[in-house]
Amino acid sequence: MSLVLYYGSGSPYAWRAQFALEHKALPYELKLLSFAAGDTRKPEFLALNPRHRVPVLVDGEFVLYESNAIVEYLDEAYPARGAPLFPGDVKTRALVRRLILEVDNYFDEAVDPLIRQAFFVKPEERDADKIARGRQALADEFALFTGAMRGEFLAGPLSAADFALYPLVAFGKRCEMKLPDLGFDALVTPGIAAWKRRVEALPYFATTIPPHWRAA
Ligand SMILES: N[C@@H](CCC(=O)N[C@@H](CS)C(=O)NCC(=O)O)C(=O)O
Image: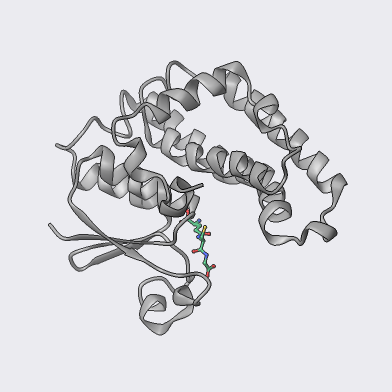
């Protein structure tokens, strides 16, 4: 087994893949790419992912991009290691897949405008209406995910759905560094706050935090 994960520090999608590698206690090598240096657009990386995005997993001869596909691959390729990330019966596994799609199709869309305003728009050019709409969209999403929760974790037991959602929630919270009036915690329901604490209590959680976020 020779696993290599290409990542960029602070990428919520790469965080998903690292969650899965740690959950499975798999040995792997991390390769850090610099977004600022344009590493994702260099020919050697484009040969791995023509969509120039991290994460990319290399397992021997096999190359895979798209974070949720990587998590599912690791779960199937290394079934003997760690509790399954697509657990339970066929209906629970379908629920995990549905939740992952809801994260990527709806939650991601809700948090993205806030991330843009916080990290990619100059302070003097920030748009208060976009921030207000983003807050509301996020509150709506937290309410929907609270309603969808089936137990201690999103689908009941810990699953790939938790790994899909958590890094985007953490990124939303991190927007407060640039938008101190965001009031992120007020948007989070008690159910999601308790879920967040459970993910943060996972024994390998600290290892997965993006390096430059640790110092913050
Ligand atoms: N749908 C992709 C999204 C990956 C993604 O957007 N990665 C960003 C970092 S957060 C990236 O690599 N951007 C660099 C680029 O676009 O060149 C996944 O889940 O893996």
